[in-house]
Amino acid sequence: MQHQLIRHGQGSRTWSIVLDSGEEVNACLEDFARHEVLSATRFTASGSFQDVVLGYLEADQLDRRRDALNHPTQVLSLVGDVDLRDCKPKIRIRVVLGDGNGARFDGQLLEGHVHRQLQVIMTEAPVQLHKDYDADAGIALFKQHGEAG
Image 1 (spheres, rainbow, N blue to C red):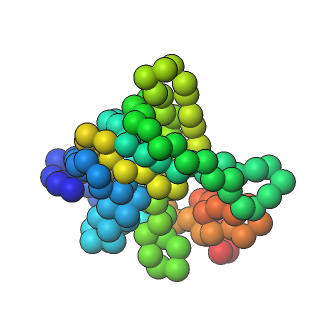
Image 2 (cartoon, rainbow, N blue to C red; image 1 turned 120 degrees about the horizontal axis):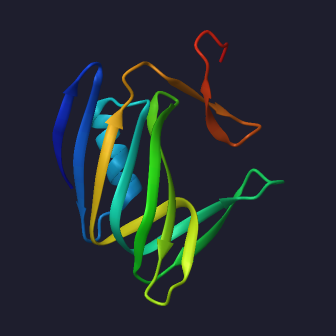
């Protein structure tokens, strides 16, 4: 993984991050977030995966269904954020992927290994936002300023 700070000012930082073939996206981005002490941060990416595990949160369950794709896919859309859970950064990524046969796949990216390259733009929020893990919802949710957590 290579990264470069491309903007710094007004209480925010923006990085360009490049992941190379074989790197696991969640682990790399969580390591980066930990190193840079990030919390309220969003990112987008483009590139391709050699394999992925997608998760789907069923409406009536807290456990995610896991679907593995063991063939190359192209990123059609990838958005994500960083929040803190137990004072550690946690990455959450939502993807839409396509393959060479025209099939489309979407879900939460639980695991993904880069095929050729993945290019990420990550931007820290300019104000202090806070997310808390909500056990009922099974995800971290934004807390409004002054709201008890």
